Amino acid sequence: MQLTNRSKQVSNKEMTMAEKMYLPSIVQGLAITIKHFFMKKPTIQYPEVKRYLGPVFRGHHVLKRDEQGRERCTACGLCAVACPAEAISMVAAERKKGEENLYREEKYAAVYEINMLRCIFCGLCEEACPKQAVYLRHDRMVPVFLERDDIVYGKDKLVERLDDRYVRMNSEVKATPTEPSLTKAAT
Amino acid sequence: MVSDELDIATKTNVPARNDETPVQYVNELTTLNLGPTHPATHGIFQNILQMDGEKIVSGEQTIGYIHRAFEKIAERRPFYQITTLTDRMNYCSSPINNMGWHMTVEKLLGIEVPKRAQYIRVIMMELARIADHLICNGILGVDTGAFTGFLYLFEERENIYEIYEEVCGARLTTNMGRIGGMERDLSPTAIRKIKEFIQRYPKVLREFENLFNRNRIFMDRTVNVGGISAERALSYGFTGPNLRAAGVDYDVRVMNPYSSYEEFEFDIPVGQSGDTYDRFMVRNEEMWQSLRIIEQAINNLPEGPYYADAPQYYLPPKQEVYKNMEALIYHFKIVMGEIDAPVGEVYHAVEGGNGELGFYLISDGGRAPYRLHFRRPCFIYYQAFPEMCVGSTLSDAIVTMSSLNVIAGELDA
Image (cartoon, rainbow over all chains, first blue to last red):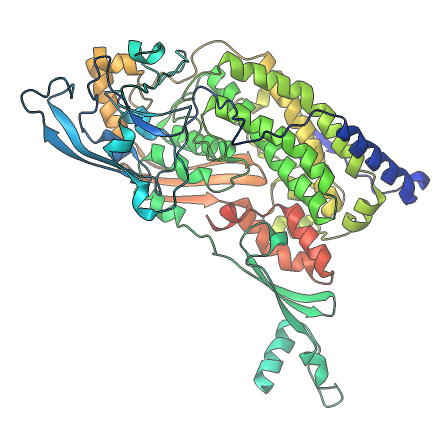
């Protein structure tokens, strides 16, 4: 049945004399296999050698701090709303006097939990965050876990450590902000 | 006991037992469970086969082993979150599912997507099609006992996944694109990788074809195995490569062009009799055609924005959110899912990895679809499977199923 003028017959089931004999195709196949012995191996020895994952890879979550080391999250809950897997939950608290060097806004997340069993690493929380607080790091993945209790990540695992700041190099990426601490290595 | 025998007899077209028929005849049929977890079925589906020795007398298929109620979940999710559900349907070609869903919503909302975004979508969809066909054909090789071609092709699949990583940040569950365009422009690295891929892939594919196309062993295993006539295929509702293998040149990209497909030159490969060999050859040729499309798209990639000028539906850039009051309002409204969707019904179909992947969306104006139905091609192919494998041997049934490319995630949604 022809519906368009673009069709192209591709299947030919008549075998020629040479094809009817098994040998030529076996020799041809073996030749291809042997050729591959001498080609470059594509295998990566994973735990020792790690592959470049691209500047926008969606890996381990991180709760960013700003340049002065204060937590950016203000517990607005947009990430929790945007999460299709309902993995994020948080409890907000008011900033007390004397905590200005810890939290940037007057409201902050006292508890911020991501259930890594639910998380599907879609990146919608990063896109939703109006404070540029939550990011999916491109350089680190969530490790394997053995205990169920370990898998709900709290602030201890999520907030970026001051001696281990997350830097996303690619400034062309839309979700990447103009924040200086993100485009150049911050100490 | 007697009723059981009668039941099997009616089901399996075995002549009704009269006094002359030996009693053992009916009991000699073996019930064989192919699946649910069988390495040769590539997924979780069960076939209850009645076997007469090595021949299949009848089959009954079971579905629902990984049913995740996507259509029901979708009724509670804002439009932009449903993309993550479509990822998990045909996971071999998730960008096609993502784009199909975005285009459906754009049709409902009346968004016109700029040319550049359409071309990027075409590139990603064709890459996904290559990845899908490559797996299907490679696995067909494995099922017929040729592991080599599969391994060589998988190296290229890895390269496709690296392009996905560069474009969207994930490999399998891509969540690529947004309603109204793409989430980011193609980076220079991504363009370089795509160009490298279209340089390198023809060589690999030609090698794969040398291994399989005219190989006597492979042809003996696939020619006239699991055939279906064009009439039967059409009455089942076949689309995609499996229908084209039966000789009907139906392709959604040509019949109902979307996303600028009318601007690209490509052929529709068709087969002769719809058997496994035809399906294999059609998929192979489609990979060549996809390469042609990608080449045309990447060379004529138009300049311009990669997202539509629809601030009420497309997230504003983060810098705008801080400076601009409207942008902040739209940002919150979009993320909360409170966009103004019109009331209406939309059907949009894309040529998915293995057939017409349709989205039927009914909106009542709320934040989530009132009802969403996915037209999943695998669901249709799987219904025809018993008919296609009756009378063949068990090993042929496995080859048939493999070449139908039934993917459990899409079958059950």
